[in-house]
Length: 239
Length: 239
DNA sequence: CCTTTTATAGTCATCACGACTATAAAAGGG
DNA sequence: CCCTTTTATAGTCGTGATGACTATAAAAGG
Image 1 (cartoon, rainbow over the protein chains, first blue to last red):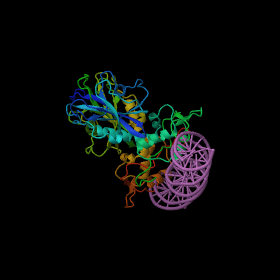
Image 2: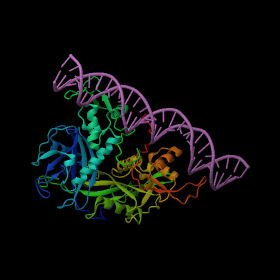
Image 3: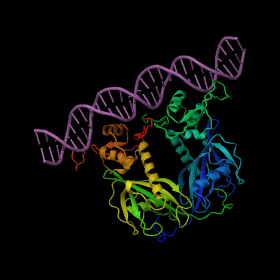
Image 4: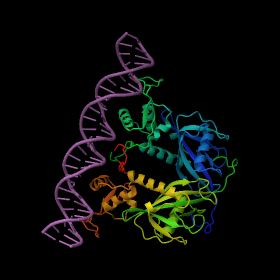
């Protein structure tokens, strides 16, 4: 922060890019927008936009989240800064530094195009390839970060509606990690962690499917998981 | 990233700020520089500087790291992006967005002032308060991040010289976490993690102190810790 | 030689967790 | 109306990681 007089500094454009995730039909989905103009016209990209003079990157990200999803209450969703991408050539037109965020939503209303004409669409994560700019990289980084945070935080409830079953919570883990988990063990672990979920006392239950109705839970007050809930080790890593 | 024509965008200055850590005399130290000009003249701050037109934030951080520490080989130290601080009022003069980094060094040569006249000094972490700008916050975030990464990565070796004893490695954990660890248990854990450390075969040993000479180890090839090495739970968190 | 200091080798009980099996409570189909 | 299917929930068992200790080894300093 020293040396204002020593170095010339080039002005940068600062943007935010959002990896907005949700779980839909047991699968991880991400919100993409179709670009209307060059460069990368017609290609899909992560939603985002410029940081305005009077707002922080966090404020800009939350504003963009509202514009692209059409959500009214934009204070609710979990929003988290990932990292900043600043390679000099990441935008062919000018020097753009982008602060990337991850947002987590419960299964959301079908996102129509935001305020601008560009249409937005929920896309299965595995189908979201070939994005504009370095957004493939940002999206992959975002998923890895979210997957890692599921291990040692209570973040999974951010994907769930206010009341949810343990089966739905387990689907969050399975969708983000791309693995399947043992149901009794998952249940034991979640219930053994105080403050992760609170049982809804009214013996409430969820209709709609076959099988025994499941008890409902709400997100608890805890934020961290001690000990963590580690993903299964696919390779020969020591268990 | 859409809407170049819709929104005006203000030019931002983009800087990097570095939290450079080392372990000195069993205590976590951080590199600070004394500001020579307003604002905050005479106060201490984290080293940093402007990102140049042709470099990424990572390149700028590594360049600044060399300038402030006087290190010749600047490719070696662990350098990691933390997050970006972008509150509109964080710099009283102009709109400055800062990408913060954490750097980890083995006990370093006494840092003299860098290329610019500002003097730099290693300061015990606990004495580094009242810094300029929002650097108190950045520094606290950096320490928390490093502490968390010690739990599930092999990052601790980045604080150590090429060859080190298990006692020195344990001091890294104790200094960053501010706790004390049981030595036999720490040893068992580290040696049970394949690839964390490799024994130096020549039965080498470290002189200088009293007591039985300790075996020497080198950093291994592993980068992650499975299962993690969790910090002791001070409160009533379930162990 | 004896104390101090540090490194290293164990022991033991507890607990978390993966892999299972078993039971309960619903829907649907003959 | 039984019987299969489906999903939720309860429990069991063995292994391995870990916290809390105790014991031994190898040096330095008086």
